[in-house]
Length: 303
Image (cartoon, rainbow, N blue to C red; front, top):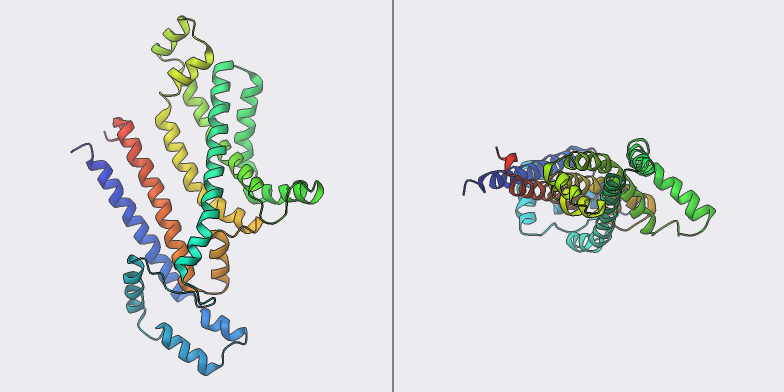
């Protein structure tokens, strides 16, 4: 039971963070000047009397604390209300946007982790200066080149100049750009951890037996580095949330990022709150899961 207590505490702490993010976002959205009624009025769709009636029907005339608890009660039941601008259930809008974001995030994650692990293992087993330079170059790329700038450059080269990919709606280029950025963030740390694992006694014994460098790296070295790989993968997944939102907007992908941006511009509060809640819960769930797995795999963390 004592082994599971840190995991339980991690789960509770993650839940508290998610609740905190949602509460702060809700109140920031409500104190922000202007609302969706103002936007609809500026667009010429509502008279002043209609605006006043709409605010009453939306409950904006009630105390802000009462509004929050009413929203929270419905949100806990899975009811995020309806979009005021589009008169659609917010849950349906999220369900339509989520698959694009998930596909982009998972594709980028697989590309990034596979590239980082493959390059780190190759550099460890082959002792090549070219591979070491590739590790350093990929790491520098992730530090020096923002994904947004890389996305703009990719559109100019592959869409406008070469015409290989469409400007709007392509998933291939965003996945590659985010994948390269993710790989650069972790490849050097994984390489250094693998280099330390190579010096362990059981690895030297395997080398003395004449095993191939690749087998030594994959079978004997990589399992030793599993905890750090797991932690770094969690950081990559967390960073993917921000990266995918940016790429969705840049490449015109109909994901949660584009949905959230349009909702912010239109002051569509139910959509903004629902999108932020989903993103916050996803972030906390990823971090909590990685922390829990890390504690189970490496008991030294608990000590």
